Length: 67
Image 1: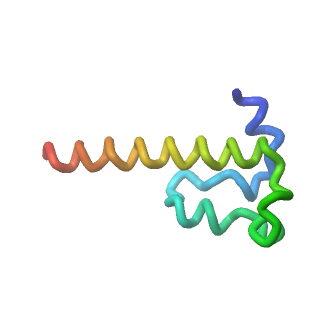
Image 2: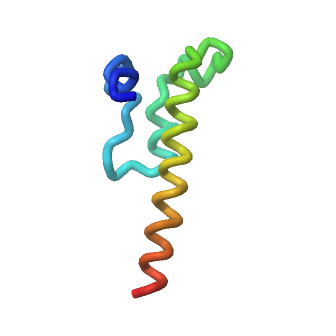
């Protein structure tokens, strides 16, 4: 799955510390104004990233609660 990341423009790749809002804001404005123009590979990438982000958030929260 590493190859698909290589094909994405770097501005679509969230920085390691980015939260989901920053990720959404990094999507080019053109895509926001015309969602149907978004190539499906971007959509699935963004959805996958959002899922990973949510999972990590829950994990971190669980860790903090155990401390």
